[in-house]
Length: 169
Image (cartoon, rainbow, N blue to C red):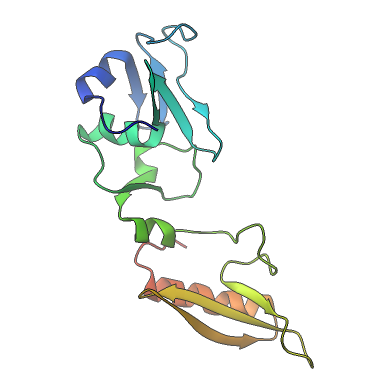
């Protein structure tokens, strides 16, 4: 993605942004494919929308921030609802990297329990136990062992609300 090298004036010359829908529409396309009135942007590999303006590609959520506020964001742009393609200004916030990472709402695909913050403890020989863990203050903290993944997840969510100021769950 391109660095912050487009001005708000140039952005507003070529695109219109609807802050209620999060959609960009071309006013004056800068390439060969798009036409005035077309919706701008396409999904990139990680699921974010990207918009090419001349030879540079920009993430649409960063352009939305620039268009709406007139300045580039200082940190990461966090999608509050975790939908990477929902670029409504009400769904975006300028946060530091740590806060952005704290806004995870779902477990990674390789997680054995399927629940955020919960793993099956395979070392217990007598009974299947689930452990809840959370990272804050730069360290991982164990929240204990639980009989069900749901109990462990409830403990994780409670700790997340206490220790992650960026948490919205």
